[in-house]
Image (cartoon, rainbow, N blue to C red):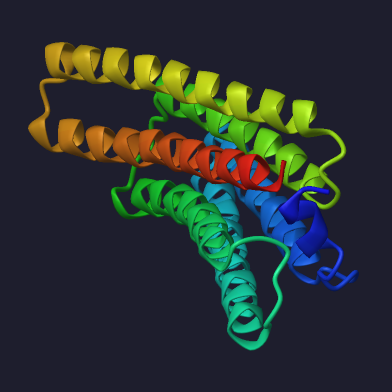
Length: 215
């Protein structure tokens, strides 16, 4: 019997962390869906209403994060390394924070004309969050490690594609945008979205670390 398997026998069967991870991932997907939805809305008033929803989702994410940390501080035996629980929780929160940042920037910068690259990046963010949700759901029993690895690989591919979209968009922006203020605004929003995919890859890296340790 492997040592990890031996110790897993003594892990509490309720595994209260897993429902919280899953709730966090579901909430993250909701934030990504709303970001994509918001960018497809032309009416400014309707768009602002969705931005408010995104902020509410971000606050809900903070509450889940705090609850996980509270559990971590009060639980002696955890399903996997405490450091990995902390990193997984933090990286999930980082993705949602950046989704909210992009939405808030669009509102505060008074962006009226939505760049096609914004929509493309939001679709990539949504794809990445769905893969995160899939991987996290399988962490509960680790019977489908191949599926978890597949989702992690897909997240890495999405991040690479997002880098390409970002770099091309920035190149076009500096070449064609004559309004310096608008250039800075668009660049900042694109940067927030690109960083969201970077953080999604961070989530993937933590998940890969967990499954290696638990194998």
